[in-house]
Length: 104
Image 1 (spheres, helix red, strand yellow):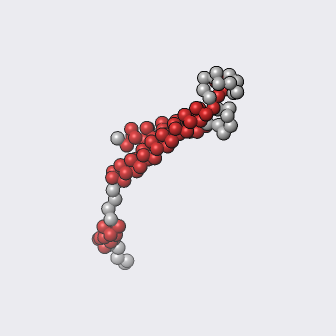
Image 2 (spheres, rainbow, N blue to C red):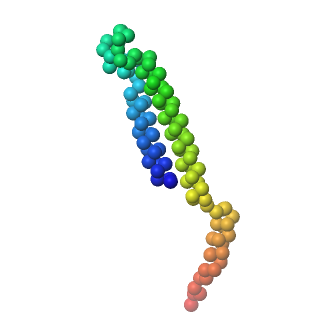
Image 3 (cartoon, helix red, strand yellow):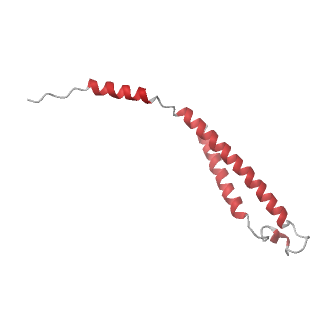
C-alpha cells in the first residue's frame, strides 16, 4: 500500500513540476499555438491557457498534499514506537543484568 502511494506521490510531483514550468508570466504561454497573439482565431487564448494551468496546478497541489498526509499517517501507524519510559526501563534492565568481570 505504501509503495503504491509513494509511486503515485512521485508521479504527482513530476506532473506538478511540469505544469509549473509550462506556465509563463507574460501572454506568450500557449497562445502561440494558434498563430498571432493578437487575433482571436487561435486555438488557445492566453487567458484560457492561464486559467487551465492555474486550475491544474491547484488540483495537483491538493492531490500532492492529501497524498503526503496519507503517506505520513500510514507510515506512522506502521512504525509505531514504544513509549520513552518503556525504552528506558528496558535499557536499565539490560544494563543491570550485565556483570563486569572481576579484576585479579
